[in-house]
Image (cartoon, rainbow, N blue to C red):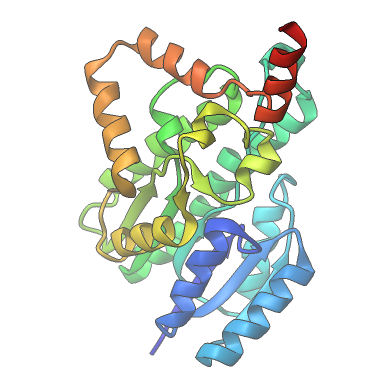
Length: 272
């Protein structure tokens, strides 16, 4: 019989792809995101295609109380969460000193604090029954500083470090923690963060279904980390051989927002 997976950020991107994988394997779902209409359409489709129960919880994880509300609602329904997937997250770009402070604070709340909060709420029951899987969406960005996206990179450093440490603590409990660390991925992230025209995305983005499938397999196998695709693996190896200063400088260049080609061509023509 299938078990229940709680997936945050399920209205799009990696959260959506991961929800589809759980449903494919016969697991019931609790899908969480801000956009109720997207979630209800997804729940209806997954229930029809795979015969699973798919429940919708519309919550904004930028609200510090949202994780507790999610937990209490599932406890009232007497639902046991076997798989906790913390996929919700977003990024911002630009110099930190000129950033929107409220948006930066919301990003830390969603990417790091709510992730930790949900994990802490659902973990004790997993340990008590000696069964459970946790998957947190980190990033290769979390392995280095990221000028131009300073707070996003820092939030992912928290996720990477927290999940690896938690996985070590959970050895022998029957519960595992896995962190997925993709590089640039083809989702709404680039558009929302304002980084879609950066050198990082111009170099190419890995498909969301591939990243999600890699993370899903790693979680089910109880692995500590998922590095999907050759770009992620090579990027991590390069960080090991270069200095921190070099890695920071490379990240700064990759996060630089480039003008569209048409604008560059127009500028060049006006100078000639």
